[in-house]
Length: 85
Length: 137
Image (cartoon, rainbow over all chains, first blue to last red; front, side, top):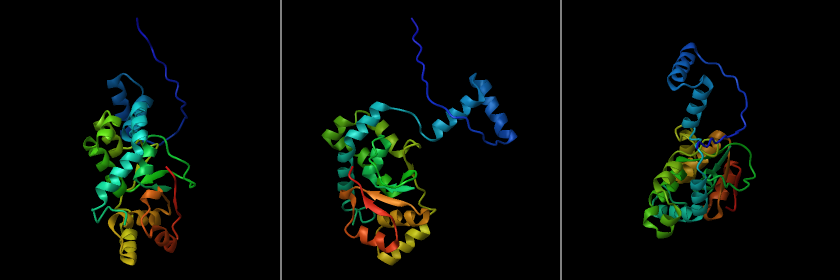
């Protein structure tokens, strides 16, 4: 049995100017990957801006935030460049 | 633009940022990012942090490369002149000089948690006309 997940993320149309070389490179990548120019641009943007989603990691970091901040203070206490002063 | 400390930065990365009372993209400095990333990297030396951060490599990666829609890290080279000027005027260390220099260069607000406010930070920021306030995490 095959399960298909559908992610309906809101998208907005945007227009940007690209050089011929940039468009050619995007189209070549799209052919290689069997995708579209838009898919390639989205993948590059997500990768460059670290837009991957990890809810479990978000929860772990959020729960540990106060303790991490306290550890950062302790580790920097004797560091003349990075202590709070 | 709002510059935040390491505590608010990790909350921003986790998507749990409290209301900052200032508009614009949320950013932090290299100094605060270093303090945060060092704490995450050092988490294996803490039993409770080790339990909380089940995947320390992923956690460190998140601190080193924050999601761009939640937090950016400022390039200190852009505001080096302002940072050096602030340090010369107030004899401050690298962390505070970078923070204030970035606020002056980018005309940004600064928000820190109460536990991360240095002794005379508020007075120094007021002297320089910087929008500075503490925020409960």
